[in-house]
Image (tube, rainbow, N blue to C red):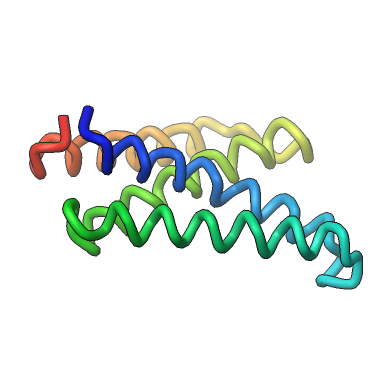
Length: 109
């Protein structure tokens, strides 16, 4: 796997981290969590911007948001007891298959 794909995958994993810390910041009123959110968000967007150069903006953004959506949803299932219906699982698998397909068709594999 190429370096830019590794960076993009890490950035994808960071997206739900800043979403989680944003919630903890209580609408940015809790300064400690607000700062953590800002730092993670800046690092996340910087890593996405690095990956966009060789991969392309459309593919990189689609993969980044897909990874972020999947792990934000998993976080909701694990931490907040959200529904794990078969429909939700099916659509998560569709996102995963789209990410794999994009990776294969852009030579990222």
